[in-house]
Image (spheres, rainbow, N blue to C red):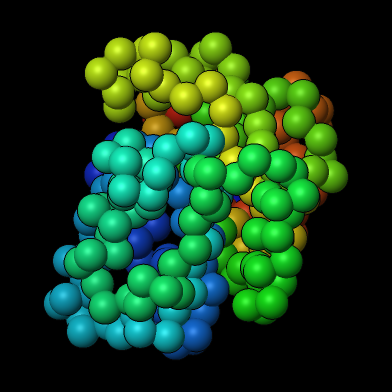
Length: 241
């Protein structure tokens, strides 16, 4: 596991955007796994600026997002499809038909697992971007998630609902379920880059870096991946030995 320490989320965005853009420049048909939430916003802002400055071509790139809220239409202002369009896709020359996000209208795990089949058909994800939940979740794989899990419908914990309520009018509006790539889906990707900033992520980062590997801290499974880079600030790193 490679650890890059940064000053803040702004610097994390500068570094992680370069990592993703190097993948795009090296392989015009790269398959990227993307994330939502507050952590990657500065990364996407930097990607937009650097794409324009460096005239980077995204027309052959395919993307797969980790998750989507169950019950939200793709045009809902709080859906992750809407987020990705607003924060990235509308500002680069990627083809929308090459950007995949689980449907919020999926009603069964059998239907959800078709997402993994589609990823496989596209050759697999070359690089996956991750955020980190305060309880150690990656994607929406909450504590107790099966390490062998594929894309499925998942229940969100109280702490995740509370953390995500800042994006909604109030906590009651936050969906209680999501469709999320499973931990096995994430572990099947070629490379992983994870962003964690702020003291609220410190305990999760400690388990991520120092283990032990446990379903109580889903992020700890990344210790078994062969190519993981984590980008953390001093707040997130404060509990590391």
